[in-house]
Image (cartoon, rainbow, N blue to C red; front, side, top):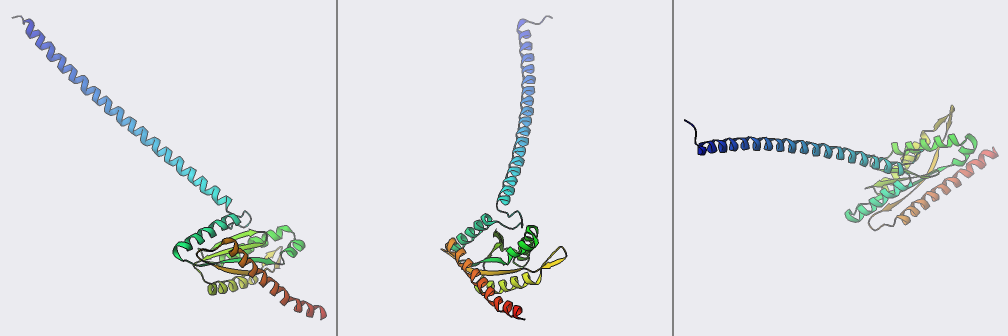
Length: 234
């Protein structure tokens, strides 16, 4: 018995609905796959951007360290030391923390350069700088200020402790000479220090420590003159 036109139309409508459902599912699956692929790409891009950002930040830190480091000794240079000192004074204004700034200057450094050459002078600077770093606390900041002048920032310290530490540094400096071309080059240095706290002016702080250092240098020089005169007389 032949199907009526109505039956055929019903069958065609059912087939159409079935095919439409299949196509919709395929489209949904395709969309989900594309979304997963796009999400994966975004995650990869984000990871790549983070890696590049980390590398850039590391590079910036390395450049900042280079700018703040003395090439000869590996210590802080004046720029790096001044930055740490400003930070310490700023912190002191908030916490009432106190500290000590020490200035050290080599005695007779010009004679070393004149007698043994600039290579020996550079070796003396490295040796002295390493000696300061070895005999100070790990959280102290040690710098070569320029020429044969060095500086130490002792945070959380007081004058009595600083005076004791300076004596130790002077003794260590004189006890460990530099061996240069088979000869022992004795090293001496003069030290001065000043205290800092809240509302401290950094220029005044450095000037006070510098003046104290030169007072000691002049005293040591005067004390050595009678010994030289006695030696010459003998």
